[in-house]
Amino acid sequence: MTIQRVLVVDDSPTERQVLSDFLTQQGMSVLTAEDGEQAVARARTEQPDLILMDVVMPGMNGYQATRVLARDEVTRHIPIIMCTSKDQPTDRIWGMRQGALDYLTKPVDLGALMRTIEALRSGASS
Image (cartoon, rainbow, N blue to C red; front, side):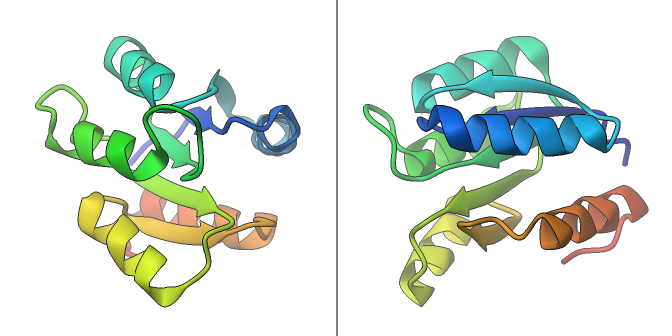
């Protein structure tokens, strides 16, 4: 799987910037969204190769946005990795049930993120 365009979804400008800078340094182009509604709209129009989704956001949260994207004919092929401060086992289970492919907790270990992306690129599941 080719992963060149990544949609970073987070209501924190700092988190968006950290992930965007890192992914850009890795040779990827980055799109951003500040909440779930923006994430769904951008994913539908821009068709990124991967979505990094926060959970706790105003309006539509990351679980809701993931569920919408995972069930939408136009976006369900796009892998979603949850990147969130919600670190309880039940949070992870819920995120995966909504359609997330993986679940990373903040602060995001950038090495773990790249290993997950490389596993997607090679077709392995994490």
